[in-house]
Image (cartoon, rainbow, N blue to C red):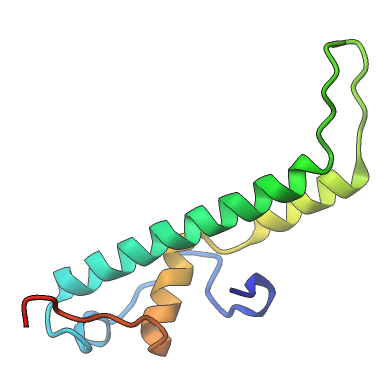
Length: 105
């Protein structure tokens, strides 16, 4: 997933309920699918951020020395400015990028 190329909104917006429920015919089922995808996206982002911040980790017991690392600050700012995982999931849902199936059928 390329986070730089996403067109998901950063702010909260209102969606048309009929557009959201159109692929499944049930708004609650659609929301459940999007929530599961948002959890997946959140874990992917968290894993990626943790890996990037591990590069800057210093394992020093001294509390006196605190260094400002500009690269670490830039990485943190990039992830703070990203759209939230639920916004990314809704955008994927509206773009038809989420595959779903009913296992009871």
